[in-house]
Image: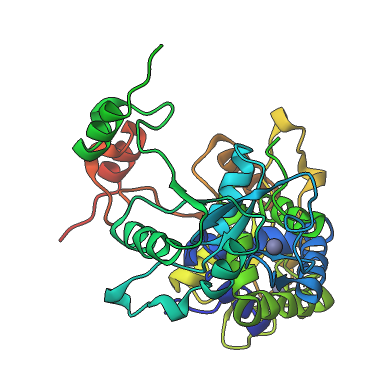
Length: 201
Length: 201
Ligand SMILES: [Zn+2]
Ligand SMILES: [Zn+2]
């Protein structure tokens, strides 16, 4: 336990900052000092941003996304294809897909993946509303944008079975070489999948 | 410019977090999402800590340290040796020395180092009060805990000259091998200094 270098208020600030992902105990001190020095330009606006988000944020009742409105900005966006539902494990995956700008659809956030080892079963995921949405008569395709991990694949398999009689098409992301990725860093499974799904030029 | 993935309030939060040292644009998104998910356990306490610090923080009129009281906790600490004054460039150096717990003295924070190239001259540093403190009749030694850089050494030289007639002893930190440091990563100057200042075992 390092010696306290300032009053308990500053030590408390450092301890809280150390719990922010990306900051460890060491960078938390540096961040605290920077925030204190730039208190008018940075700490004060950040405090306001926190208060604003804290006062408004909620989980979208339709899709499970997190936003300052409910239903969320994506669910009320009329320019998106209502027939395509992209299923993701976490809001961070939704953000990644939106940043990529690769698809203009609606989402469904499961809130995790099935993981028997961690005791996460179907009842822990946002699956009930997914069934309802898949049966709403508008949705024609459910794209499972889940990780190519054991838990991701287990979840994809479960959802596919769950939606078997719904009449909607269930698809998944393609496997292959990441854009900009070097071949010699890829595992055999990825290489085999990329070869199998090769396309004409 | 990546596409906005959420309402403007969350985008603003991400932009502000990206300006915190240790977090870049990428980790700022991850940090924002974590703070939103852990809003009761982390974002809300952090907002309170910000407000508390913002309401109380100030620069110590005696030493230039930053604290929630003025004079600061260190200046009013009667258990510290009042005859030894440790001069540092920045509050971060004071924090580093205090964390090390290597010295139980008072400090004087210059607020930077002399840097002709960056246009930082003596009038930009907290030097006037240093002269007053060195002449207060209590201080017997001024330890210059400044970096072994060109600017640090320029500043050390300037302060030494400034205090030449004060009657106080002016000292500096020893050069040498960092504890835990590998020899073959050290520059020749450090190695030469470490050899020159070698001690008996
Ligand atoms: Zn939504
Ligand atoms: Zn002070």
